[in-house]
Image (cartoon, rainbow, N blue to C red; front, side, top):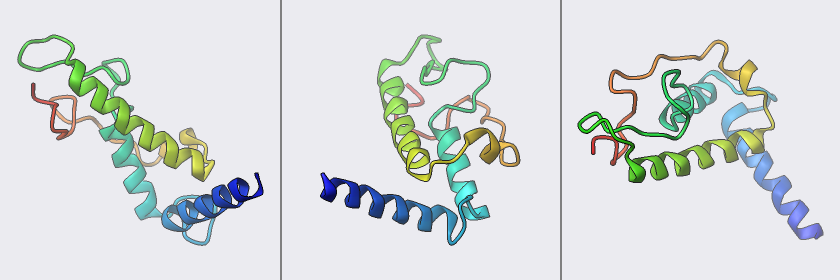
Length: 111
């Protein structure tokens, strides 16, 4: 149990050092990376449900692209969880509009 707590503590410190430097809020480059991951995970799209990818060709839900996006979202949520930051505060200044197709360049986005 103590080993698990120490391991989690080390991981959190590593994530904080990577995204926040010496502070407890993300530095500009860290915030930019987090904003990009958030957008890539489909969490910034206002017109669709998070995680659902609709094929621009068929207009149907693309199950493979949706599963891929869910995995990317899990990675994003893990990083934010380790940082223990408030997402609303983080993205007030770093909000971006989605790309024209409504998805970034994931390998399954154009099915």
